[in-house]
Each structure stands twice: as structure tokens, then as C-alpha cells.
Image 1: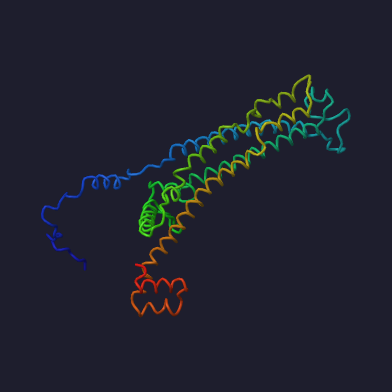
Image 2 (image 1 turned 90 degrees about the vertical axis):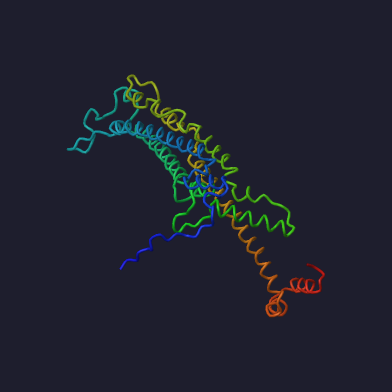
Length: 331
């Protein structure tokens, strides 16, 4: 049967203790309770970067669609008409070529070469869009990679997803405070561990700015749609050359390395995660050794435990420290 809590039972609070906590602590608690105590210093520039990724991706997709639409018509021009009875072009010639193109002495093979250059452009266009999607996913996926790392460091998120344990603001601040205090007591020169362990928050804006600079550089400064390839092929008289069309299409991309450079910027974001994590792990190891020194100090103060350090596994250097301590030569 259910248990009924005794009516009227309350804790024994000290007299006049209600609302006696310092006001700044109460105010801080209210911010924490409302989720408004922290802000991500990289939030705005990251949001702008993602918007630029979306804009460039849409521009690339639109231009690839334009190329695809024209390519369908061009593929019709490239098909040689065959007499189904003879398996040969009909007497007098069989062609789907525009009159001006044929009159200029160009053939279906020339159209096929133009189509091939369009295919190459579309493939590179798609690769850029794919890599932009990879970059966007890396910096926007809530439970992984850069967004998770950045959100945990800035305090806008407290917990990691199950199976993906990572340090958060609270644990890092506590770790840095402990190591800094103990190192000062141990006579170790001050090191700014906050800047090292929260490195992303200090220098991430440079990484974002560099990625933004790439996105501000138009990957297709001249669009396929602006070339009017189909209109040129259909022109009568046709006064150009297939080789010039192929060259124009081949020059659409502003940089042949744009796609690979996108992934380089993704790697730059990963470097932040790697560096911050390494600094955190170094401090964890250092704190372990600082704390161990207190433990050993306690053990060597009692003969029963000291025996293990003097006669079993203590190094010669450690044994000398124990001798010096016991002789009063050191504190």
C-alpha cells in the first residue's frame, strides 16, 4: 500500500534563516535556473557562417540545375538519326543538329564534347556542395563535433549525450582552479590554464573568419546560366567554336581547389576540439599527481605504510626525500 507522508512535518530551519543568502548568489541562481547565465561568444559569427554556407549551396544548386536543363536539349542534338531498317543514317543525312551548327561544319561529336564539359562542371559543383554540407554538419550538429564542444565550453549546454562524455564549463573551471591553487602552493610558476583549456572561445573567431572569407569568395564568379551555351549552339549562323564553349564551361569555377579547401576549414574546427581536449587531459593528469603527493606524504608518515616506499617500490630519489624529511632537513 502507498506510504502517506506525515502531515505538518517540515525541516528544522534555523530561526530567521529564510532569504538570508547573499543577494548576488540568489541572482546568479536565478540566471542559472532560467538558463540565461551564459552566452556563446562565437554564436553570432557561427550563425553568419552557416547562413553563408546555405547561400552558397543554394547558388551552386541553382546553377547546376540550369546546366542540367540545357544538357537535356543538347543530348538530343548529339543523337545521330538512324534508319531502323538499314541501321544507317538515312540517305541525304539524318541529324538533330541545329542548322547553324551543322552549316558551320560541326557534328554530333562536337556537341558530345560540350556535354562532357558540362558533366565535369556539374560533378565539381556537386563536390563543393557535398563538402559544404559536411562542414555545416560538423559545426551545427547538437550532439557531436564542434557545436557540442563549443556549447559545453561556453556553458550554454551542461551535459553531453549518452556515450559521448566530454568536459563542460563547470568541470573545466573546477579543474583549472584546483591545479592553479595547488601549483601556487607547490611553488610552480603561474600558467594561464584558462586560456589553454578554453582555447576555442579565445581563438575560434579567427577560424570562423577564415572560413567566412572562403565563402565570401564566389565559387562560380561566372555562372553557367550566364554563358548561354544552348543559345549559342542553336544560333544561326553559328560563328563560334565548340572548343571555346568547352573552355568557357571549364573556367566557371573560380578555384579548382575550392572543394578541398572547404574540408580544410572543417579540419581547422577539429583542431580546436583536439587542442582543448589535450590541454584538459594534461591538467587532469597533473591534478592526479598533485593529489598523489598528498597521499604519499600521509603514507610515509606512518612506518607501516612507509615500508612500501623505502623497501619495496620507492625510487632512490623518493627514498632520499623520506630520509631528509625524517631527519628534519626539509619540511
